Length: 535
Image (cartoon, rainbow, N blue to C red; front, side):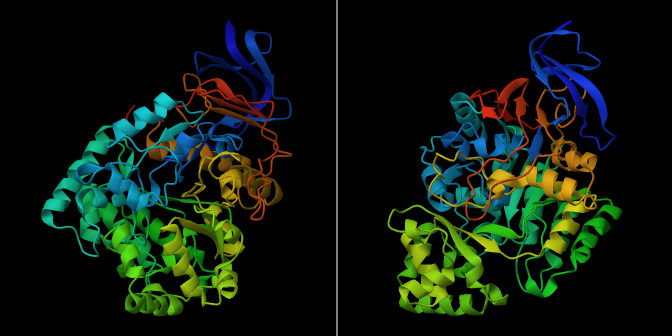
């Protein structure tokens, strides 16, 4: 038989965790049509994978590319890594539903996180998906519905639980988004306004989606004093009460007092699983986070939406109180190490010079203490200011990566080096997460995980969580989302100082059987689409 594409002479690592094997892979009509000794078959295009691995495309379980793929539909920073599907809507931030408050209010309140130059013309998940698909995109997108969007939609932006009418409408909107194809409900319980939700409220939202096959709950958990372990226990409690599986976001130890004890956090996941809850987590391979500097600012100061938040900055007494709390640590937590908070992006031309500088340095430059410098930046940028935060240790990262319930998520966006983010210095995870796993934690540190395990954590395992039965593995009949990489050379090149650098060792990436990266170059093809739960 003749194939559209035939990948020959490669070693297949199929995404199941099973052993590698030598085989050719034939692709027809966007799907894997044959696996075996196919070298003599005819094909419109042949790709020689001698010395290379043929694996399923990587599924990024934690991204924030909800709107960056409108500005940069090629998704270069992810496509060059071998990512063929972005899971969006994490940390409670999704660009839908707009609900009664309307899309203008939604964008005003979360546009500082979901940065885009595009006009927001949609209100629902379905309308947003239509924009993505009509615009065209190189890689796939799997969306989640965010708790922040739900609260904004019904006007519940104050520091209080939702009232019964608000909760009922949020339940309706959450169910509507899941019906339209969203895969799960996400929260950001240390981020406003999601942080104003209590355990009961989130469990009630989960109950509203629990009858949809495959739907689950994903959480950026609370960061508060005494919650180092309790934050995971709350996630498990919500899963039990809500009747849904749980995905814990970007597992890490960021509290300095608890460095070196990662097994204590993972033990909560293991107990939940022993108690019958399907609970897993994602993690990225870096000792630094990426965060809005509003995560150093008291939650009460941010309530009521962006305009109310900006208004408090103009009140000297409230500003002084916020600054005092920031200095000792938000909500009574650890005091920030301001020299570890390095500004990665701002929106105003006037502040471009602060990119790459720590908040401590900026405070010295301005003659103010770091907490005041942070408030000034938030005020000047209307909260659209992000930082890279160096707050982890390598020992913990390795442990979290290697655990059986871990899958990989970058917490980074699909962007272009010459697009909207070109003047920013984003976290290198935008460009380097997956080749970093393959190079640093498989080839250079094989005790962390085997190649087969890594591909499972990056493809097969995420596909299972999303109930994507037609992706995440190399098997006949599945969609041909495929990566061809050199296991001996693959490595990330993005750094904190120079993040806009593509990896090496990944010459070919196919989405639905169409090359997006071919011989190391982006083809500008747009075979991706918005995937739908149950689709």
